[in-house]
Length: 137
Length: 395
Image 1 (cartoon, helix red, strand yellow):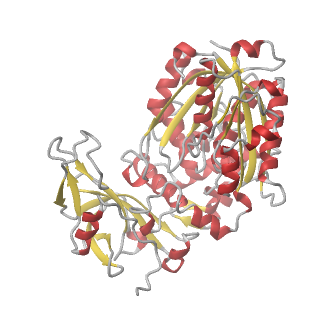
Image 2 (tube, each protein chain N blue to C red):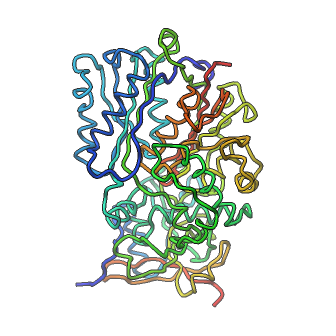
Image 3 (spheres, chains in turn cyan, green):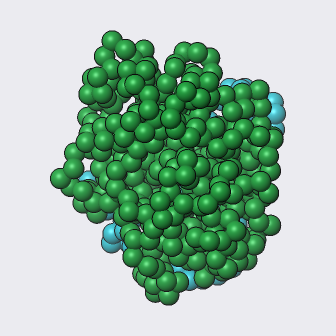
């Protein structure tokens, strides 16, 4: 039994492949062959052309920090022992974006526009979260 | 509301109870007193209210289902008279969503008079319970909650990006809190009425960078209400009708991590639509009742609606132009940062303040001669932008 106390992702049938890939330390997104849209977070069908024929693609894992914040006070209860921590939105080179934590970096060194790469945190036997660290280390 | 319905409906009555921490005041009491005062203020016989719209309340799901299931109809003596009781909720944008729903019902003849009402009691909640609740609102349980996101951080992410793109300074952002407090000093219903300085804001603890404690709103207990009827019916009432002249809105995201234009959102599109319908422009506006909740939203709205050039709103506020006596009075009840954040009611209080000012009932903070007012709202993780134009006359 894992001692991990933070919330784990509530997975849907159509997002399960994302989490399965994360367990293998791969960051994936959906691609719609009929309208060429890259999609993240995973969708049941393409929100642009409504095609259900979506493909999973491996992302480069590279992107940049669109924005971030260092949380110092009043976090959700399970995060009280993790202060301070950095939440950030990262835009991937593939044009999609996601929420994440920036790790392996002093919080005061995080900047908008900073280049980052994905790294994987096996938080439980079942789940791996995708974090990002500075590309230049 | 588009041009073809300009000025066809009006707010004719408003009610509100003081915001703050009132553990001994039942939420139902806040709702009933606000509703009663709004109906009395309108001069309408109470049984002419044929639709009741309670906005969503978050502190207690049981209280909220009572609202959905017509408790107010019973308490207000409207059984057998009200045709419909329906909840309208768009988070912080419930103000605009209720107004638009009420206007549609009145214009189509489904309703003669609509009561829009809200009360909340989450200001009395223990702090950590509040922080935990605010880590669920509009936050994706799959993609965002695992990373420890909460509402303060949502606003901080937006503030960080806005400052990065526009060069707006920490001092300029903090000055919004000072400007809002200047108004709250004149508002007996405000939670915080003591003077606040720029130094107070900047010296307060860093909660989630770049936001300091005074830049984060405090949740409050409170209640407010307004009554909407047709301009035709309003003519025979002994009240100053506040006409809805135009409105516009757009939804830009659910999860904040999917928003791609965090320094603008949809305010320009919403404002263009509202001004087009009203036949007015930013230069005609006397008061900007902007939905705050955090300082950055006042600045974004000032710029995107057309009151200031991009990147100049911070300086505009810093120079005092939005203060009492300034050229563009802004959020004259003190906003959620000073009147207190009553959940979906934070925006409703801003809408009620717009009506109050145009009715000339602003008391010590009355903006003399105000004819036209812009009012904004946004809900969830700033998922939408609503802009409405109200007037005490139809241009």
